[in-house]
Each structure stands twice: as C-alpha cells, then as structure tokens.
Image (cartoon, rainbow, N blue to C red; front, side):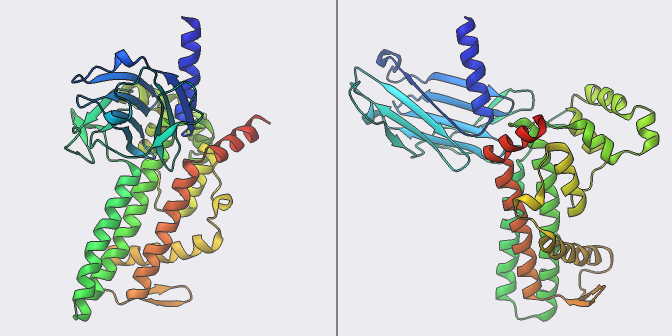
Length: 361
C-alpha cells in the first residue's frame, strides 16, 4: 500500500508540473465492449487526467489544467480490439497531449495519437471535485457555476482572453464595413477599452490559477509589499487568514479580493507576480519599452472611460495621440503580446524549476 501511495504522490507531482509521461500495462479483459469504464484517474490541485474506455470501444486520455483547458487524445477501438497484450503511454505538456499504444511486447515504439475522438471535457472545482461537461458527441464550453451567490467555478483566464479577442474581431468586422468616420472612431475606442479590460481580467484570473497548478505562492512576501506598516503591526496576515477560512477561499484569493489588487496597472501586476511567484516580467520578454507602449494604451482607455467614448485624440505628456486604426491595431498587438508572454511563462516547467532552485539557494 505504501508503494502505491508513493507512486500516486510521484504521479501527482508530475501531473501538476504540466509536463510528464506515464506508461503501464492494461489487461485486455478490462476493455469490455459496450460499457464505459474509467481505467485510471488522478487529480492534483486543479490538474486532472483520466483514461477512459467509452461504450463504443474508443479509449480517451482526458487532461485538464486551468492554463491549458480541457484536452483529449484518443485511440479508436480498431487500434486495440482482439489484442492479447496492451501497454498504454500518456504524454502531456503545455503544447499538446497524446496517447500511445503497444499491442505486442516485442514492439519497439508506441504508436501515438493526438486525435480527439470525443467532445466530452472536464473541469475541476477549487476543492478538487471533478466536473464532467458534455458527452462524446455534444460539447459544452465556458462553464460558470455559482452556489449561494458565490462562484464555485469560473471561466478560465485564457478563455476570458479568447472571448475578448472574439469580441474585438466582431467589432473590427463592423469597422471594415463602415464608411462613417464617427462610427469607426467609436468602435476603435471601444476596442481599446475592451482590450485593456480583457488584459486585466486575464491577469487577475491567471494570477489566482497559478496556485492551482505547480506554483506555490509566497503570500507573506505579497502582504509585505502591498500592506502598510500599521496594517502589518496589527497582524493583517492573521486577519486575512481568518477571512479566507470564513469565505472558504485560499489566502491568496482573499488577499486579491480584500486588498482589491489592481492588475490593470502593468507596473503593479509585475510586482504582484514577482513577489508572489518569483516571476520577473523583464526575464520573460516584457521589457521597459513594452511597458511604456502599454501605458500609452492604458492612458487612452482611461480618457475614453472617464471623458468620452468619442474622443478623437488623447492627451499625453509628449503631445497628443490620435485615435485611429493604427492605434487600435497596435493596442491589440501589444496586449496580446503581454498575455502570450505571461501565459507561456506560467506554464513553463523550466522557468518554475529555475525559480524554485533560486528560492532554495
């Protein structure tokens, strides 16, 4: 039993690390035609995998993490039926998952498949409860679940960003079809507002999701950074810990909500990620030039929101910025670059391992 527990613990650590592989023998008699069977299942924090035989005889490898969403790779019944020997391999990383099969002990290599033969997907609650969504032939997306006025499961950070880009794409179609100057002006300004709001929502969600994967937050360092001397003297951390227990939140989520952390401000969000996770934006390609460019977009968005959605130019310390197609395109490109860099770094086991080594040295 202890050996099995050790094995499960090792598997869980590899699962939450976002990259891993696993292979084992499956007895062919376990694959009963016409019956859905869970062959293997494991959850670590909010990272989940399941190996499942469906009622049509296909074998599916389901994988979910907040950073990668739900994914599936499948083997068809034809690839394993009548086999007297069966060894299955699972591989997962941020880019893809795949399932491999050997039907003969003398076979040198696995035959791998990335084909998704099921539209079924999974999500995981913050308490580790697994939520199946849809079925093999019917997909369901972007689940939001509330209980007693509280969100139990919310749209993922990357999904929220993809929705922002989808909204922007719709608005851009109207710009292309319009000859009205004022209409195009308002739409350009609306896109600038949308892209900044989308970035803020993504950053806040991803910041919280990271502790549900492989990252261990340094809550004390964050509290020391954002709280004043008087709050610290009054033991603010102890108060936040009690509030987190009452709200059934993690301490990190309580800090974010109670202190109303501002993820729209790039300078502040850089500090939050650095103090909490050791993630330094300058080291993942987000340099001072990028920060300066984004701050211009943020300034425009602020004037649109608080002055007028029909502004044709924005006040800036070096003069004015004209609202036009170039500004809108640049705003989307800069913000997309920020999200891509943050997301890739948050999924990188190499970056995580290096930061852990630095923290221990």
